[in-house]
Length: 438
Image 1 (spheres, one colour):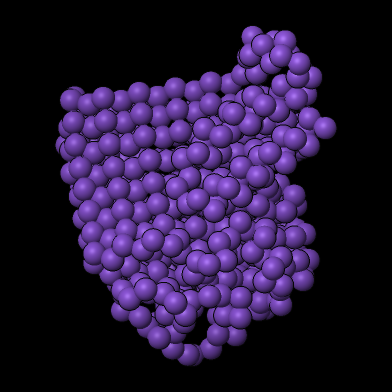
Image 2: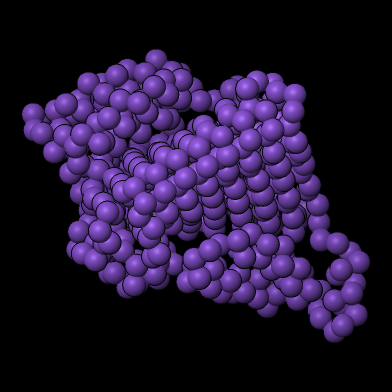
């Protein structure tokens, strides 16, 4: 999207941020930021002429004058934890308007071998682990939104799990937009490094009030035999824009599971890229999106099987009412050396209104010959026979619809392994579909 005026607005914000930062301990990172902004200037915003953005128009974001927040606002910890489904007993790192909020965080009881800290502080201290990771990860030069995030990132979380450490409690990353300033933008980056044989659950929660833009990139690197269970919970405001990316490298015999739970927002884009980069690597991608009104949610997933004997399983389900619009584009790539691949992908959508729209595109690109791969998608309304059965048992039409909708969504919710989060989600579903039946 080559609107020079709109691009220059972001360039001006970048220069202002760089000037304000001055020459401090983070100066080593300035060349990385400069190169990223130059890349964004060259590429501009993606448009509907790009195949991957065919059904998602970013014009509402591009034409808006979002401004970077100057720092975090004060918030009530009670309101924050309630909205994000947070476990009050588990460690958490909190970011408000894109900045680390130590007074809301709880990191004093981290187990030995677990490191969680502000990314901005790690950059300032020229952390060697972060520096080595960033030199590898910034090779994604063809993605303008990734480049823009790199250039404007203010903060985020740096997490490192040492070799063989197995963490029972989830590590929570809470991102909240305060609404203190109108049309605020936040750019955050999370770097998560899990060494061999480690095991951890990571919860990213996004919420806020009023109108804002959230750009969030999470990069996860797993060594051999690591087990990572990742959750992205979005309860953004009805006026919010959230552009997220999850990039994961899964090594030999490592297991990675991701859960994308979208419960809010005006325009949401979730990009998930997983590379199965070792023999015996496994991943499971689960997604649930519940849309109403004029909400627009676009889920793009890509799983690359780069080594033999890897396995992937993907299930995304959506329930749409009102004039909501959902997009699902799931791609599985099997490289020529990735023999004995086992990959399955399913996308199911339930339409509760005549104006709701879904565009779904499952894809397979197979360059090996000894594989088991399948994909499929469905778009439809509630089963009339099931509705009739419930009506015959005394339920009203709305109640019957709510029962079936709840059952449809529960298939994904029941895959959540964190008990407190699963309970919160079930309560949310009961309230949501109970209200629609009332």
